[in-house]
Image (cartoon, rainbow, N blue to C red; front, side, top):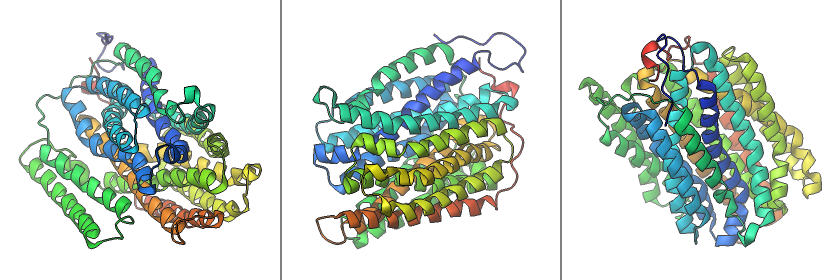
Length: 490
C-alpha cells in the first residue's frame, strides 16, 4: 500500500520523495541496462539463433520502436487515470516479458517478446519523469534530474560488463539468456518497493483518449523505421520509398488532428500547445538527432569488436568502460551545476562527442587485438564526458516550459522523440555498417569491418555537430514552473 501524504500545508513537498526517487531510478536503471546488455550480446544472439543482419537490427529496434510508439499514449494515460497505477503495471509487464525474452526459442519469438517488453517500458518511463516533476520543488528538481544522468552513467558501465560476464560464464548452459532473466529479481523488488513509497497521484478522469492520434503516430513511426531497416534487404524497391512517403503524410495528418482536437476542446495525444512551443519542438528535434547517434553507435561498435576483431563479449564490454566512466564523471559534475548554463553545457557536450568520434575514427584502425584496446580508451572517455554533459542539460531545457497538467504527455513526448531517434539511429547506422560490410561479397574480412566502422562514424560526427548548431536557435529556458500546490500528490 502507498503511504498517503501528510495533511500539511499545500506547498510542502512529499516527505518521502528521496526514497521514492531511488525506486524510480531503479526502474529507469532496469530499462537502460537492458539496452546496453543487449548491445554486447548481439553477436552471441546472432550465432546462437542463426539470425540475419536485419533480424539482429530488429532485436534492438523492435524494443525501441514499441517503446517510442507507447510513450505518448501511456504518458497521457498516466495523466488520466493516475501515474502510480500505470507505473506499477509497467514494472510488472517489463519483468514478465523479460522472462519471455530469456526463454525465447527463436529469433522471431525473441523479437515479439521484445515488442511487449518495449510497451511495458513505455508504461513505466513517462510516469517516472512526471512523478518527479510534481513531487519535487523547483530548487531540488535540478538535483533529481542530475541523478537520472548518474543512473544512466551507472547503467552504461554496468550493462556491457554484466552482459559480457553473464555470457562468458554461460550459466547452466544458457548462453545469452541470463541477460534478460536477470531483470526478474530486480523487477520484483522494484514492484514491491514502489507500492510502498510512491504516492498516489490523482488523475484527470475527464480526459478522453486520443485513439486517432495514437494510431496515426504509431503507424507513421513504424513505417519509417521499417523502411529504413528492411530497405537494404529488398533492394530499395519503390514501395520502400512509398512507405516513407506514407509516414510523412501520417505525421502531417497527426499534426492537423491535434490542432482540430484542441479547437474542439478535446484531449490531444501530444498537446497542440506543445507543438506550438518553439523551444519544445526545437529541443525534441535535438533529442531525436542526438539519440540517433548514441543508439546506433553502440550497436555497430559491439559487432565491430566481436565479429570484426574477435573480442569475447566480456572483452567487448571492458573496452567500452572508458566511455561509461566519462559519463559518470560528467554526470557528477552536472549534479553540482544543477540548472546553470544549460544551453552552453548542451552545445559543449555535443561538440565533445563529435570530437571523440573524430578521434576514435582516426585510431580504431590501429587496434588488431584486445591487447591494443587501450588505443580507444581516450577518445571513448572524451565521448562519454560529452554524452553525460548533454543528456541532463538537454532534458531540463526542453521540459522547463511544460505545464503540470501536461507533465505526463510532455515527458512522454520527449522520451518518444528520444526513442524514435534511437530507432532511426539503429536503422541508419545499420544500413551504413552492413552495406559497407556486405558490399564486397558474402565473406567479410577484417578490413571491411574496419571500413564499415569508420564509415558509420561519419554519421555520428554529423549528428552531434548538428545538435550543437541547433542549440544556438534555442531561447533561454524559463524558470521551472511545473511544481504547484495543485500538483502535490495525495
